[in-house]
Image (cartoon, rainbow, N blue to C red; front, side, top):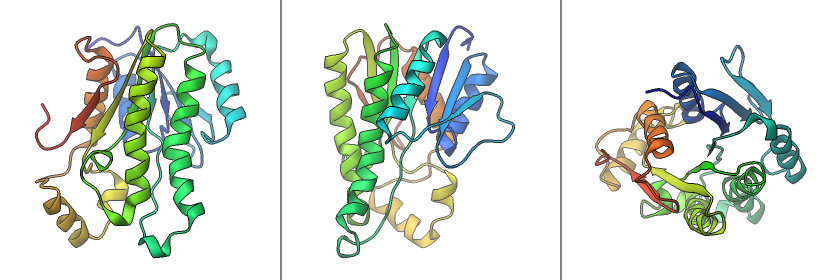
Length: 228
C-alpha cells in the first residue's frame, strides 16, 4: 500500500481510532496532520495542532493555515458521549454532545471545503445512528444519525469531493475496554455483535474508503461483525 502522495488531516487524532489511523498512514508514507483539543500527543510521528472544533473562528483559522499543505483527505474522528438516563440529563448536556459530534463535523467540512478542490472527507459515525440505539446514549445516537444525514447532504453540496461516513459498531478502544464488562457483554448481545471490532481494522477501512473509487460520495458504510 503506497500512500506517499497523500496528505491526510485527522480531526481528533488523540483518540484511539484517530491515533491508530495516523500511525498506519505514517508508516505507509502519507503526510499526516492531526488536531487535538485537550489531550496533546507527546513524541507523535506526525504534525499536531490544537483545535476546538466547536469554535468557529479556530476551525476557520486552522483550515486557512493549512491551505498550502494540499490536503487530500480529512477524517473527522472527534466525538464525545455522556451516557445517562433522560431524567438525569440536562438540555445543555444533551446539546454539548450534539455540538461536538454534529456541529464540529459541520464546521470542519465547511472550512475544509474552502481549501480542497478535490479529495475525500470521511465522517466517523456509528451504528448507533442507524439501528443499535440505547436510551442512555440518546444524545450520542441522535448526533450520529444526524451526522449520517449531514454527510449525504454535504455530498450533494460539494460534488467535487467524495464525502462519506463510516459507521462502526463497538470497537476495542480504551474507553470501551474500561466499561463495566457485564454491561458491555449485555450490549453486544443485544445488538448481536460477537466480538469487538479492532481499531486497526477500522483504520484500514477508513483507508479503503479513501482509495476505493467504487465507494461513491454520500455512502454510509456500516462496519460490524459482517464487514469484509
